[in-house]
Length: 146
Length: 146
DNA sequence: CCTTTTATTGCAAATCGTTTGCAACAAGAT
DNA sequence: ATCTTGTTGCAAACGATTTGCAATAAAAGG
Image (cartoon, rainbow over all chains, first blue to last red; front, side, top):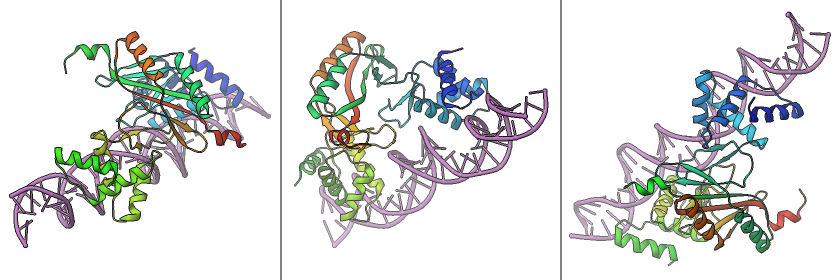
């Protein structure tokens, strides 16, 4: 059984709720689609196993997982107003998006913690999360001519 | 005459186009609403001077200013899918948003440049822009009980 | 194993934020 | 003052997401 399915089962035990075929398929899709799929992309994949599954079920399940802090969602595209889902809970990993081909690269940098600390000190704020997004050109798209 | 109006007039001279009452009002609103208003908020304000002005005109004008790089737009709310407009062109200033009261604090930190440089070196990417968002509690909301 | 309970689903319709086509209008050049 | 054409208001379209509700199906209890 997959990681996420296991994790969800634990939550169901403690909080109540049911494991359904739809949820199982969506969880599996999340693990298979590593690169920040949209709800539609997840829907397309689960539909291959069960064509009757509905987009609203996908959304409901994703939002539910988000509320359990098992996945997260981001606006990774500047122009599109579409959420992308990340099979990883919290912050502390960040994204680069290629403006040309759309590739998303994840990265991490402990220096962000210093940024946070310095901001907190300067403004007396308590920072609970951070989003850092770079956009530009990936190696492939740099070498290609326009 | 306000800063933005002046700036826009320059662009109109070089690129063609017209200065209208609607555009003037929207530009003034942008200068008055310092804290990242939504299109609706701008609309509400300009309506006080000219109730016939339409929301779509507001959007068109904002997108036009964005394309001239005179303002910028961001998704500053995690849950809402609403754009917020920033009467400042490029990146290189960042945002903190209080999860409780919604206050937005702007900040800047040259250390972000180092983050960018280090990412570029590690991943061979060319970074053209960056978005950095912190969220948590502002000083006021920390001291208040829930 | 069969019944019962109620969480979850599919569907269609609603909603939210934003964009677009088009005829009417009004800047500003002539 | 007139003409040209960029800009507006309106209504309708749009994309992404959410919701109400009756039907379905987990899983708890007998």
